Length: 105
Image 1 (cartoon, rainbow, N blue to C red):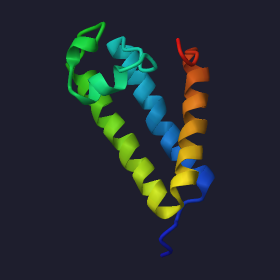
Image 2: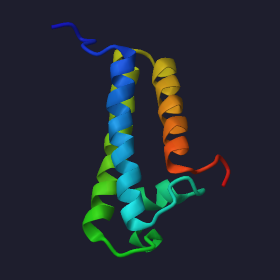
Image 3: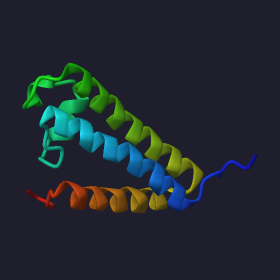
Image 4: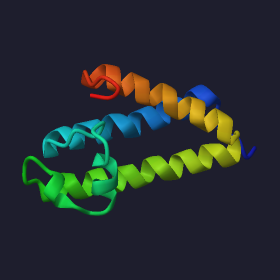
C-alpha cells in the first residue's frame, strides 16, 4: 500500500470532520475557540475557561485539539508542510463561516 493513501481533498475532509466536532464540543462547553489564548488554555487543561461545566465535553475537546495537531503533523509528513498549512487554513476558514465567528472577534 502506498504511503500516501489519501488525496489532499480527503485529508481536508478528514481534518474538517475533526474540527467540526471540536466546534461542537466547544459549544457545549461555551468556549469561544477563536478568542486569543482560548485554544492554549484548553490544551493547558484549564477548565476555568468553560462557560458551562461539562467535564466530559472539555476532555473530549482537549483530546480533539491534540488529534487535530497530530493529523496536521501526519499531513506534513505525507504531503508537505506547505500543503498541510493550506489545508488547515481552508478548514479554519470553513469552520469560522459555519460557527459565525469572524477573524479577530
